[in-house]
Length: 374
Ligand SMILES: *[C@@H]1O[C@H](CO)[C@@H](O)[C@H](O)[C@H]1NC(C)=O
Ligand SMILES: *[C@@H]1O[C@H](CO)[C@@H](O)[C@H](O)[C@H]1NC(C)=O
Ligand SMILES: *[C@@H]1O[C@H](CO)[C@@H](O)[C@H](O)[C@H]1NC(C)=O
Ligand SMILES: *[C@@H]1O[C@H](CO)[C@@H](O)[C@H](O)[C@H]1NC(C)=O
Ligand SMILES: *[C@@H]1O[C@H](CO)[C@@H](O)[C@H](O)[C@H]1NC(C)=O
Image 1 (cartoon, helix red, strand yellow):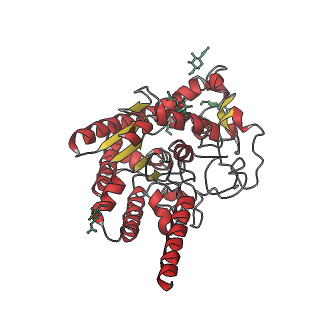
Image 2 (cartoon, protein in one colour):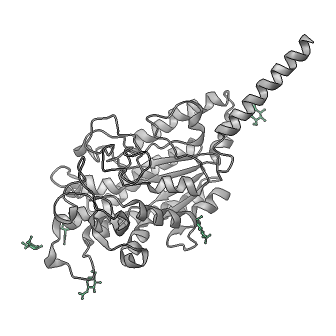
Image 3 (cartoon, protein in one colour):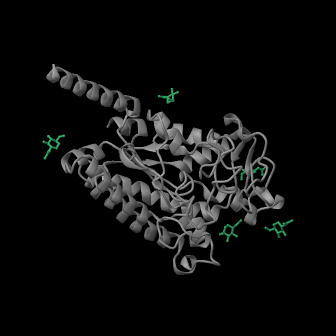
């Protein structure tokens, strides 16, 4: 009798544990066990909330279209990685490293930090943040945490991590908040756009191979968008006299520098796929996506492509969106939320292309959906 009740208690306990695992089991539908994110304010979801920096967005009207309100995301709603997580079948968004605890880390973490760049000094004009090297260190300590959850079984851990998707989108701030800010940084005096791109790629390459050495096998490397066309740059140098009615005159000096960097990035992805055992790297061409968005704005339903929905000054692009400022009424008509960042609707289009476009000019050599299955 006593034995029987013990067995019953045991089975009940097991049943409860299984039930709890199931109800928590956010991955029962996801295409990959976890999703790790490295990047800047384009994908940061709150890692800067508690540090001393101007690169913060946990105040209204940021998040005006996000159910939980302002979270630290630098847009009105979801970021590109929020949408990618949904497309990959995750039930919840990937939590920021700064707040994630316990077994939650098994689904993946978001290490992205506003103002961050590949170079350590990038973004210092805005205050504290976590540059790429620190984000990689955060991943390294996360792996230790995962190892404990896997009871020290490193074989199992390596196998698990090899199935995860890694999203790495870096470089915008190395131009915006470094090279093209000559009053604060000396890089544009020390390097030509070509040698600077080579320098960035060298640093980037070191960090990406570090991720590979730590176990990353499925890596989506995201290029830098058309920074010469964001409201901030249009506001700095453009005015009505050098703009016509049909188009926005982008800053081609900046765009050309970005193209040099992106071209090297594609070469790097090709090289890794040839040289690193079992590596599957893809290049997500956000430069092409942002160009397409601007060129075919009307088709996508955007009326305003040269102004932020929220901001200050010419093109709403001179200062970023301030606390409690009134944003534009209809966000869906704007390509840009503020001087630097796309609206949620623009993020949706970019995420969908990254996820399942079949055009090699959007995703090379395969899309994220294929990467998940690979
Ligand atoms: C580690 O996990 C693998 C597969 O999950 C298993 O085959 C192996 O026996 C485990 N090793 C140890 C030391 O527990
Ligand atoms: C483009 O940006 C560069 C670098 O910030 C600047 O020197 C140049 O004046 C800008 N050109 C135009 C046409 O806006
Ligand atoms: C417009 O830009 C030109 C050259 O870029 C400059 O000379 C002119 O003063 C600007 N006009 C206004 C109203 O800002
Ligand atoms: C207006 O600017 C766009 C973009 O720079 C350009 O493609 C187009 O030819 C220009 N149109 C006219 C009438 O100058
Ligand atoms: C891409 O994914 C979206 C969202 O899941 C879906 O609606 C669309 O049909 C897919 N397109 C292709 C070509 O698979």
